[in-house]
Image 1 (cartoon, rainbow, N blue to C red):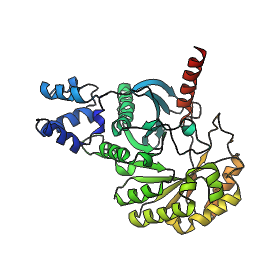
Image 2 (image 1 turned 180 degrees about the vertical axis):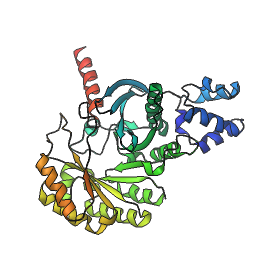
Image 3 (image 1 turned 90 degrees about the vertical axis):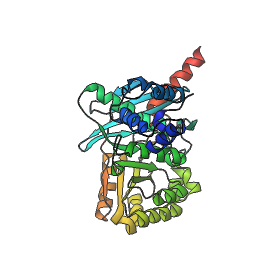
Image 4 (image 1 turned 60 degrees about the vertical axis):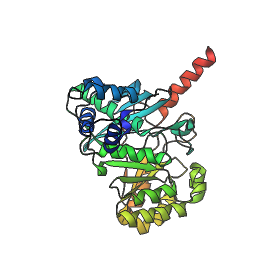
Length: 357
């Protein structure tokens, strides 16, 4: 199976072309056709000679993902289910905000982190996505926007889809290099956010990268007992180790970190937990932001959404104690809103079809 051309950074593309007897300037031409003119086949690259076109076709492909389902919400959110060449499925979501268009990308087929409230982890990890498969999600969304003819472009990226990005670290970093390239999509590093459930060694490594990319940490609980109960990863990297890694990141980068906190009814949404969270973050409050997230119920999980009153009380408790925070504005609530739900539904349909056959 030929890999995606989108998996190469511009430097890697230059090196590969030179190694195969082509001139270095060909990489600039190909790059421009891919990311500025956004062609869907090598044959559309009009100023690239046929020998180079043949070489590219022999070793790479442009379109490896196929759109299986596209759901559009009344608020403008669009959720895509893409099929990979090996038959696996992934989700990608386009969201509209006042500041621009943001795309949430997937980094793995399934997830092994095993958060007990998450739809993404219902199906365990099958494999990592290549950097090209991650980039192609952005390109497919941009192609969809181009087809509308409104001149809109993807301006922000959140790496928060199915999978744990830091469990697919190298491919995720290559993806960032490609979409951030000034001669290509030119999506600013500060417009890119990576979310991790807390793989501590990779948090240290990421801090040392020197990138301007934003980091979000899926915390969801202020103490070990509660966090271990809902997030298995806490057994490997308990809260104390997690906070040490956060301190290192803040000292190294001087960049704000976002703490993601999904509010689960009568599980982690009481004032008591809010006060524990204040205590946990009080010495980091100058570079911390807590993103409170109303829960989207998942059919195979027992959790319920927090009441409006509990959400308000939690929010006000953090504010009263000088913790910067906000409640996430919901996107796509009239479609399969929770990450992984659309893919899970499709897999269940396939399984039922096989069983009934």
